Image 1: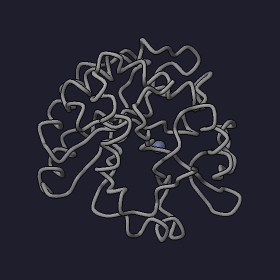
Image 2 (image 1 turned 45 degrees about the vertical axis):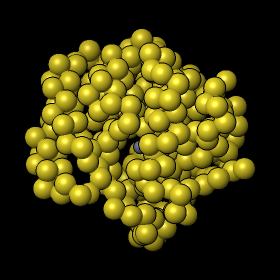
Image 3 (image 1 turned 90 degrees about the horizontal axis):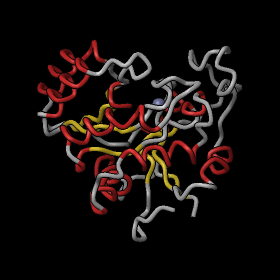
Image 4 (image 1 turned 45 degrees about the horizontal axis):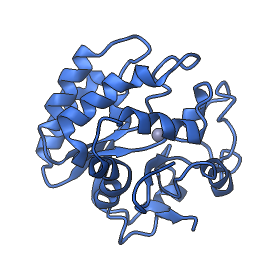
Length: 229
Ligand SMILES: [Zn+2]
């Protein structure tokens, strides 16, 4: 299924949490599908039907316990922003040109509302800064959660790749949050993003799914990489 010429696919954005042990303000109880602990064993089960075996764990909320775990992750910064934050984000990334930033979830475009123009302009502006990367992640839950289809995501993914280039984009599932959207299991979410990049060359796909995330987070040297093999 993967067709990545033996290269390992690395998911740039996965969460684990234990809300029986630690307090998190999110996810809230109304989000039934994900308001429970997610352990490594749950992740392993979700990954099993997909070709993905390596992930980057992203904190939901900064607890001391989790921060200790991630302490030496290096100088990268995940930017969780939306369209209204583009100007502020632009100021920050220009102020720290040596720090590498990655925009989480392509800045959460309002896909279900069909909004794209202002988001497109903002992403183009941020992409002009070579220290800014973008995660192709978190989009299935921004589309209609009941009726999403791959075609809804394509214009957004294509724009991200057009302005950042395949060298500064990385795939992330946002599991288990993605499962809030209908039928968005790990495997189906992965497949959806793969379909969104069908216009890319083989080596561009490998950059987006395998290589950029490793370079960005410096995973060759770091221990937060979880390897199930
Ligand atoms: Zn996330």
